[in-house]
Length: 357
Image (cartoon, rainbow, N blue to C red; front, side, top):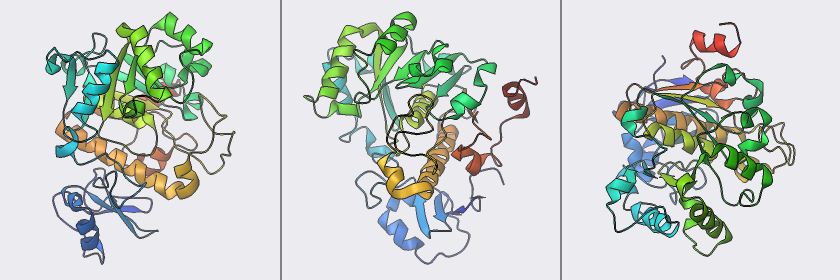
């Protein structure tokens, strides 16, 4: 069984109720879960067989799910929510990336899953529907896998990508930066790469935008005003705990790319220590609080819902979409453990990564 349908099982996780309402067998507390998360009846409901936990896409921010949420809110409320269009327009206007006197439709793209700015350097969905993009995240497979053996129309990355010698040799077309992660206004290595390659910088609106006087918000505002031709914005309904790389993948899907290659989306590992992370960009970081507190099963559930979600997006928006986990088989690659058997890399791609094609 390779589709995410009733009875699909990976490791200790099983789909016990499908989005069409069919169930494997009665589950003791399933009705209670659906009552607590009513929208779960519209999605696959998974069961953690080891920890006896139900989980689904219906776990929203501010819900009883707590930290184990995956989205800001339900799809039909996203655009009108506190994280929706008005908030994006307010921040983007202040950053001079949006003009309220012009048509919103001429400046932005939006649906129930994403809001992002239109930009001359970010092709339309129609232009991207036969193109490929590589999304480079910060996991160790960036270093261990020969992803450079493949060709891509575009390359996207995030944060301190420029600190990785292998990545910095490539022209990155789009990056996103978490404003409080490093001082990108004054970092000489970043500014050197930026001036030489001029990547489009797409800032997440939510990062600091709700508190307009914060240093992070003001830093973003200054950068956008300094480089108006090289900046834009985006904001996803998806809000899982595993980092901005997953949101970049959502962004790429909703921008219409046909083939999306992912490298460095590996996850945290038990062998990591504070200041000694298995990170391709910056190893001298603290272990994330969510991993320190909740560990591997939390991470796996988060990754499962991410994959469940992008398969749902594929069916709804981009039927011809193909997503390739180039980190398949790499040590600590969580997606390998969960989905390599059911969604394997094609043989031809494996051969090119290995240099045997």
